[in-house]
Image (cartoon, rainbow, N blue to C red; front, top):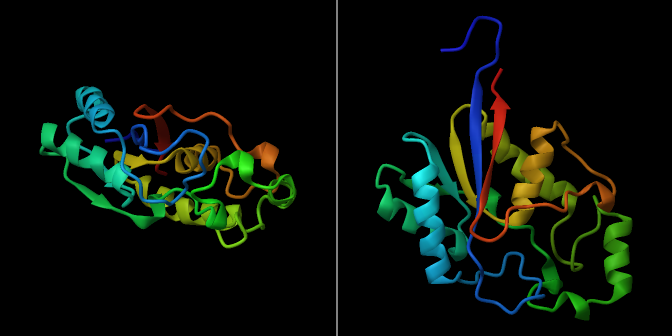
Length: 192
């Protein structure tokens, strides 16, 4: 119970899936690729030892995240999860499945030049839409201790949202840091 006049504080755990089974340097966004099974098991074991007893678990429906959610639930049956499409990685359209180095510099420049409004890979998601999608899930997570099993882009967006940033206009405003594969971080959120 929080003190009168003080906002309650909740934890949002942000766990990134294990190493995906795709060549390094490939833009994979929402491609539904599996993660390394051994690395997933190691991550689940470490995460299970750190998580509190009671929290809501929500996973991206992409199989690399569901693999981790299932491995975690096998170790901690009290941590039943549900999936939420809002926790999927950003959609990179026609860039998905291509090596980042093979994407024309003019396309990347167009994206970074209009970072909020340009559809990544011509048919993909706009950063403004991605931030709104993650923001809606973030707002729901404020009321309870929650674990998201998700992707680097979603974790970066959540970090901005926790700082009160709902929109960004420039590519240099986007955080570069995110947990490595199979790692996590926590955010403390005020609920009031």
